[in-house]
Length: 275
Image (cartoon, rainbow, N blue to C red; front, side):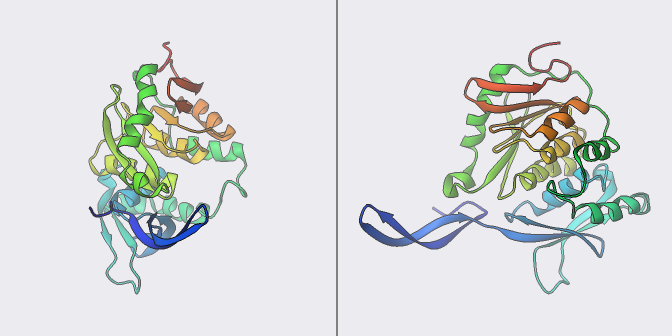
């Protein structure tokens, strides 16, 4: 049986007790992808190949470069560069001048990480300028939330093969899986999921639950809010800034979602435990 997409084979020496055995192992593929707006490079991200069009679309949406599918003419692999792994995003004729300042700002700000540059308040204020607080009207049972990690794990073919891929999954209120993507980076997996919805013209995602396989960082909540996702769940811990941003934008944030246990850090308008 062939390996899933995003999985490669590499030599390995395994020591079991006193024995050392040569063999090969499945590992997650990690390669750079340069994203360009027209002929202008805007970012390079280390990602697992596959669904690059979704990744580029989700990236542009969550970085406020576009507002939806209408702003995109197309996303194509570059055929001119001396190296591969380049996605070229073409904005519509009306969107290009309208978003020129956002493109330039994104190019500058993408070099700012959580370890330097913007402080927490500035980061939250910047996101709040691009997205309004999410509305009420979507509710989900705690029992449904409790079932989601198992449902996500069953669909993680890449993780099953390598143990080295993060996942992001979008579920509906009944816990049915709408889309799942895997990547070496949590943020890339989220961009792929949101990009999938962007390309289908399904924004804002006002009726979905985003589940990530790791922790809930500021960036994860930011991307979910930009896509209009009202409920964000993580199997691991949240960060303080993630909780603060979720509170500011009325995003329900659930973490340590394991079995029938969960911590609900923000519940917006009572989406989980009622108004």
